[in-house]
Length: 94
Length: 477
Image (cartoon, rainbow over all chains, first blue to last red; front, side, top):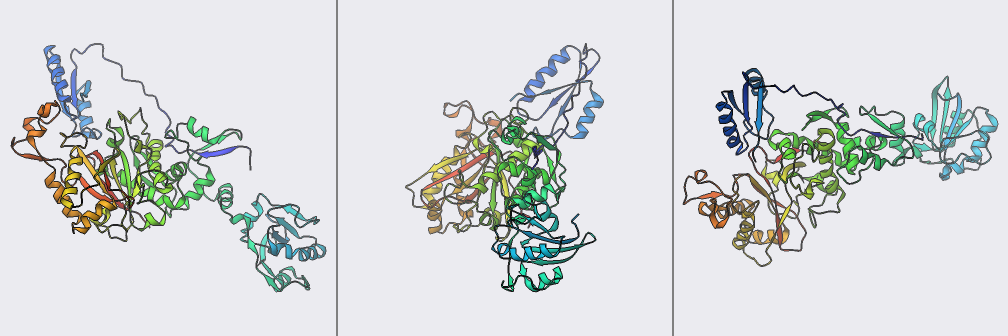
């Protein structure tokens, strides 16, 4: 037997990847803000309030909703949000 | 490559090998190119100069030795003759020499080669590359404690694991006919392709025997069926974790416990199969507590929660049969559970009374006012089952009775009712004078398990949202 011992890696062996966050906009002026309701109860209460506050400031707001909170957002929804907004707020109020 | 000439493979532990020592001396005296490979003791046979130490068994492995003594003749690097055990005529023919072993019996069977001993066969196969593992090899210095290395690398659930050496993984893979690189599925939350090999590695760490591997593989597959909602199960703040229930002949074959303490500790198959599924989720899927696993409290069953349904001791159809599988099928069911809640009724002797006890306890699952997003597996034990059997109640009859008993008056469920703020909103109950079912259709199931003494049953409650459902899969033969 050799001096070294060997174990087999039980993990997915994903290389950790660091992706920098997108730079935060310095101002919301002229941007469209998406509000994503993940379909968890009372999230809409919080988003309704945000919606009103943002509109008071004259900002453009669009609303989106995931079919269920326990699944990933469908690709089409993610693409739609990306096409229509520059900023997205995803809210949870459990 | 072996040298030309005669090769004899022997071990001291074998009486036949000891018997034929005079023959080996005859051959050594007559033919210069006799090599004797000794498997267990390099000084056997005593005083012979041509003995080669094969205690590492590499020569024996390459020569494919199954029995000792074995006599082989090599010519031009190829084997041209082999005698297994002692047989004078065969040995004389291969040696090309008459008069071998005078006074010895004509023939005598040999003993098993050391290469076939448990644990050794796997080590040799791994060392000689019988399986090409795709997983990364993690090298440790010889002084490192492999158990501690597994902790340091974050591979454990908090309890020690069996270090996944190539030898152990090789042995584990013998438990399935599936190819090591076959894909079992994509494990959330990272959704990385999980191979049979990765499941085998985690099954080794969980402490499984190779014969449990088909159950573990099927449990992983069942948990990946979208109906089960594994991503939600592991990411939720809720208490739940996967519960594995095994039906059919395989449960007995691998020694699973369906009787006394079926939901408790002490049975290797029960304990390690459930743990293997959770280690796959952790290590391959990346679902770790404090990260994607956001459980507020969790439950002890998240280490392992696995049992077999007691089919032999039951007069009711098993859960798998209810689901349309034949009795002869071996299946794995995964459902979500947050622990076992006792139902203690030592008095009821009529099915009507006992059903009411069950209903009263089940009504409290999660909260007496909770009527949505709650599911349960009711585990009925032998002493309670007998009450229903004696009265001729089928499982379906009990289900129907419970369904009726678990129609809860809306007035009990409303917010503020009974001085408790929690509850449902009036708009969720169209008829304020009506009732609502505690469990949505199909989310209360009944199974049989448990020891013969004790008028106790239990229910395993769990999140019952429409995205999280029990899944049953047949174990591939």
